Image (cartoon, one colour):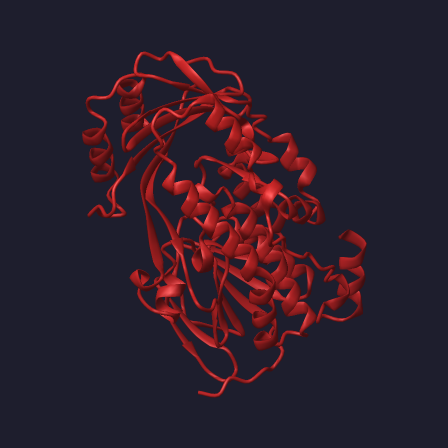
Length: 402
């Protein structure tokens, strides 16, 4: 099939977490018409804290959201490492896990949705069923809605991307397991913690609890080492059984946390993994964020990659006048080194995740070696304001608000 380079205008984005709405924001600013389709019936709430580092803060500033995000900062301090009796034996410096700014993921996704809902079409409760590319665009069928035609399709639908599977092939070709599974859920701050957390670990297992929303709530997590677990991704009860069985004999607050997990209003369970691909685009279809280059939770960079990738992808589409072949190549060229470095961080983080009772000296050394002090592949944020394909009005509007 021959792919033409007619200037693109309509863009379907699969996924309404972080990368999708952020891309929709910038596409609209540059004069494109984005549509976001999301399998869930509404914006997803819950989730653990996510952090922002380096250029991601610049992107938030350019979106006019940085100060509002700062108001939601968890202001997380150092955390205590404790033994089975709850006795502290070391302090985990916040710089290792909290970034320059940290907020709950549900707060971030809600803010991105509110920033785009008036300008962007959202379709909740549906997902892509098939993709058929032609010379003018991509014919998309949906699980529930009627077929539609778009100039471009972007998969921003996470680690288990349906878009990636349809366009590039099955998940096992691209997903690299890091040997860790994680469960996350919300609960009351019953320990009365203040801007801090507690972490408990035994060989191959860990549990923790951190405060949230000005100490009025908490988020807890269980982590376990395993190469591959057989389970239904949609079976919450089955996933919780895995955790309950693995942690049945552990001390500290684990029995209470297991009880809270069973009652939690939200619950997330998945493998820690990376996505490794030779290319992130195929014809008129391109991947963004975790769908194309997940670095893994142990990298601490997933949210930053999503925001920066969205900014660059939209900007390169504008700079190329909607020529997707030029834009996709430039997007990958700008992001590839940055992503590669973060995926290395993710693998290194996974390797030391269950280190036995680290000493304070080791933790302080890790804090001094945070990637902000050692990075070699910073990403370049161009000013794309004058590159809009939508004419002088859109250019002026973008220039006045960036």
